[in-house]
Length: 185
Image (cartoon, rainbow, N blue to C red; front, side, top):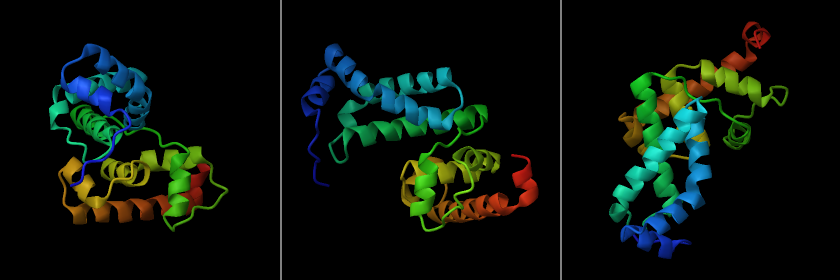
């Protein structure tokens, strides 16, 4: 794979030489975004912060394995997502509320949801889905992972990922159409 040009390559190189100053610079550049990624998966700000911190520690320990094949932010985000999912598996926590991004992604994914549904309602419906559907919907719709990446992250087959996505979408549509379900919200 061809190396990608990195915006912060000098800082990344300094991190590979164990420069604490460079590590702090890289942390400051990416911390907020990585916190938000972790927070999508867990409902607790403190837990999301812990996950983000652990992900940075893991990234700095393994920075030599970063080969510029993808953007550094994407490489780091993958670590954060994996840490978040590991934490969910460990504690059997609820997956996080999905924000406004879901509405845009759903509409762009050729299965428009009526505009009468609020983002909050869509979030509540997705949060009521089984974890296997919530995880795949979140990774695919929000994080932009493809089925191969989802299969690696969740240790499932690509076909299982596709099936969970299709069933999750179907359940979401059905529950949004179900008037008795809608009345609860």
